[in-house]
Image (cartoon, rainbow, N blue to C red; front, side):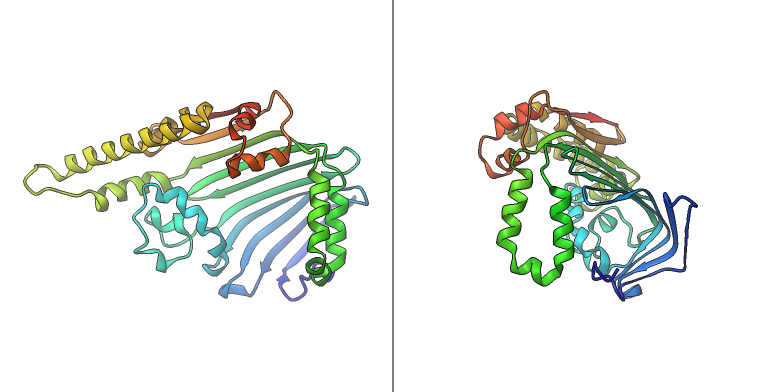
Length: 307
């Protein structure tokens, strides 16, 4: 804790471990300054532990996680996911977690979280997995594998040992080191999935209820809302498909799947990448930077499917 500058920011009620040291269970964990801006978990379990000069591997599972409004400020960007059909920002002052209010909720229920990481310098490989299950909102999962990673574990260890001052002082060196670690690194596998647990469905219903421009002379309000909602989704799908055809034609089907998600015809959406040709991590910058994105995307061979 001292080496990682965590003194005074984390506490727990009890700690237990297996006889052979392969599993650690920590109960009543609190991170941060309590209710004002911290996290609390009923139980945190650490397994698959390896930590030596060439490799770090760990799997962290947290159950019954409770987060304060302040600690969720960094997650505001997730609100965009719900705000495709959102109600705007009028109610957001009630809570800092966008998806919560976009779906008609103002209280976050305890949720479960899992994170696994394996940095192996000898195998020149990095793998990881993330899972978040939020009741009444969504379930999100992601996994990846990167090969030909050179000395990433050693670099991370050096940064931790150097402390904050050394890290800030050596930003130039750090950037060069990161570039060296990823210079020949290849993205070998990526899978990301989003499953609706009620957030999207409620958001769509609220959008119909409060965003539809009603005409008092046009008959049933419910029929007007439904018709307007259908037109809105159709227009969004056309715009989405037009943009995808220009830059990522292989993802065009994703537009229709998103519309089906908002109509309640599927439970979620998944993006899978399993490249048939090598794709270097540094080349992925072009996907976001407007470079040779078509060629990179073609090599990535992404596929979108419904859940």
